[in-house]
Image (tube, rainbow, N blue to C red):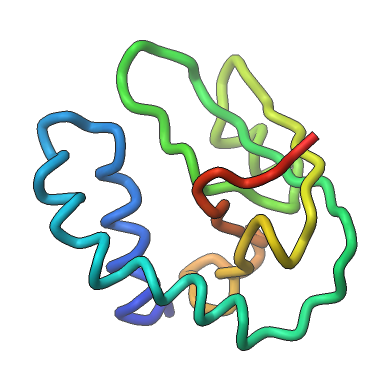
Length: 118
């Protein structure tokens, strides 16, 4: 039961890094980029570190860079040969989008571009 905004942001973020859609992606950034920042500002997160996971199959083609989860099992299910374990600051590096997702149990988060991580 994802919202229109969730679906549009997710659809647009999947275009990043795909040179065939670079012009389309860049045309959407000015309109959509403020929404994750505003959503994050509206939520009251404590400043703490958290571990998130991202499973991927590495290839020369596009790898989705911004979707990740708090649930290691979910990341391992979607990934094949690489699992990223990322320690990041909760309120400054990512946005909890699970309330807007069709699959809230996946505990999905989106990384901000240039996120600080260990």
